[in-house]
Figure: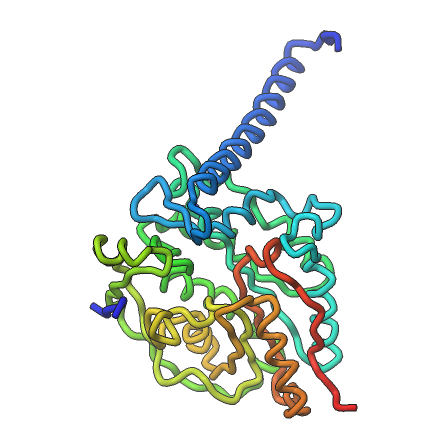
Length: 348
């Protein structure tokens, strides 16, 4: 049992212009240097990973980082890519797929909110390599703004997490040894998403259910980024978590779809705990039971595929569901397949 509850020729300038030119050059060099330093740190971490190894050790023990997340961050600012499929490991562009799915849902009377979970190293770069700061890591905000400019609701958790850790450095928003956010990270994200969607008509008019959030208790665990040998030799990680009761699942106008970030601290077993995950805290924040379709595989494709199959047998699947929260790790933007999958499959 691995668990136990207990961020050209020189030109003559007037003196003041020399100052502005110097400051601009210094700023550009500083920004370039920061990007180079971060890229070098990622490259070094990936180079040190053994073949087939899923994670790399950080500069601060016992922090581990998912290699696919580091590869994703090495792509830099995705908003600057002329063709995102050139940066994607599967050769696909997620933007048209997301837009098509959002449009299909809109036709069905369903609102979509996209919730990408930032990479751990984008929030805690100093844990990856000594000397790095949050300002050194590439930001996904310009890319999220690009998605939002198409009319899709997007929750910017990266900005939220960076601001929160600056004010509350004592609260870890990610697990050091696991591939997921921490219980506090899940709770904070849920509260932020609730603010985005609480006033949407289908949710504002829905019948409310009262939930209780417990006082913090300690969760001790060995995360999924540790080898079996490390789990045997390293002390368990310990983080506070709050449980939500009663059960938060049920018939609801709100459906959460996505990857294991939906399940961690909620599904138990390898997901570490129950009743304390993102969905649980979202239910508590909205006073609303929540339906869920999630997968420990790709959060980009698998939930949509599961829903498409269900609609064959349940043609009225979307009739009672009016808002979809699509939660998945941000690395899917450059590592996911992003297949075109219909929201509703109609029998011929």
